[in-house]
Length: 79
Image 1: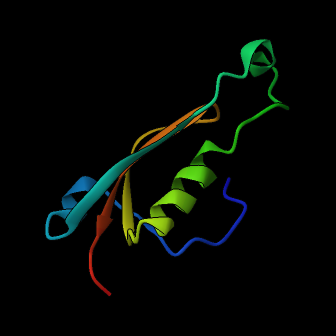
Image 2: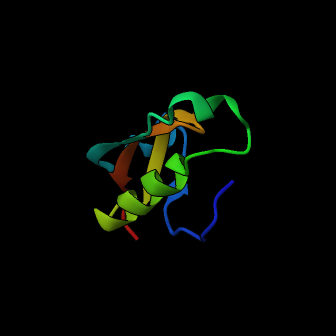
């Protein structure tokens, strides 16, 4: 669940065919043994969305989205 309102839209790959690819963004955390407890999570999704905004992306396509790590392809699709 996202903690902040992001301007980056989540899209499917077919919706970004006319867009410019910027980068693949990944965030991972090795939380060790605490990873098995559901109360300890890493905000990988939020970090990816934040980084996508920082590089000027308007859309992301998720490659992986887990509590311990996320990855997405960032695109610029115009205003």
